Length: 137
Image 1 (spheres, rainbow, N blue to C red):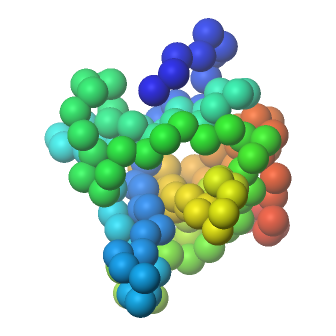
Image 2: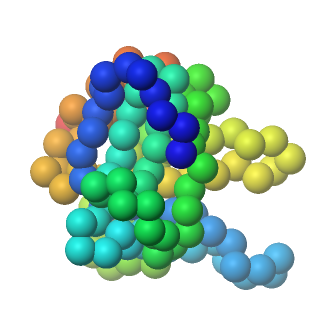
C-alpha cells in the first residue's frame, strides 16, 4: 500500500464486503472481508482510498487484499446489502466502485462500525468520488 503524506479525510474501522464472481458462470456475490481481531480499516485521502487491516499489521485480509483506489476513478452509491448479497440482515452501506477497465471494475461495500454513513460520504465526496445516488439520510 502506498503511503500518502496528507492527513486522512477519513480513517475508521468498517464492515466491508467485496463483490466477487467465483467463476465465469457463477453469480456475483458479496464476500465479507475479515481482518482478524483488529478488523478492517478504511482510509480516505484526497489521492487514494485504501481498505486494509486495522493497525497496519501487514497480515492478509480474509476476502483478499484490495489494491488502493484512486478517488477520481471511483463512483459511490448507497445500497442495501445483506448476507451473501441477499436481503437477509440487509443494512445500508456505501458501495464504492473503481473503474479498472476491460469490464473488471472492483466494488467494495462499506459500513462504518459507528454507523455514520454521512461522515464517510462527505469524506469520499471531498476526495473526488462521484456520487451516483442520493446521500445517506
